[in-house]
Amino acid sequence: MISLTSTAEAAYKLATSFTPNDPAPISNLSAVGFELGHYGEAGELAVKALSLSVDADEAWKQKILSRIVRSFVHVQNYEGALSAAQRMVESQERESLISHLRFLLDLSQKGIDAVALRKSIVMSLPRYRPCL
Image 1 (tube, one colour):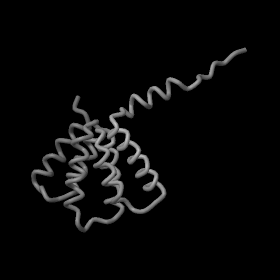
Image 2 (cartoon, rainbow, N blue to C red; image 1 turned 90 degrees about the vertical axis):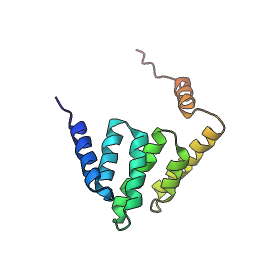
Image 3 (cartoon, rainbow, N blue to C red; image 1 turned 30 degrees about the vertical axis):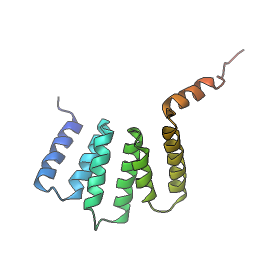
């Protein structure tokens, strides 16, 4: 049985070969890559799609920037994620995102593994134990 994502991936790859300067199939290929867990590739494709979209509407650009941020966070490219977040439209969510990305970037520059830190914090929390 052929999976829907592999079919979509093949179709978008074919579309990008026919129109290499059209951001739409590149963006869609990026979305498929993200759903498949290929975050590095998805982020790079989203960056390429964004660079080709000079006349795209703002909502589309924000969606692509969001995918870039999420993809780069997954591969721990916090500088790339921060750069993309700073290009997003001014909002409270954007400011919160930038603050958190700066924190993650600071941790990584100090050599602290954020995943290990999160695990140690969660494991040290008191657990609810029901009793009768």
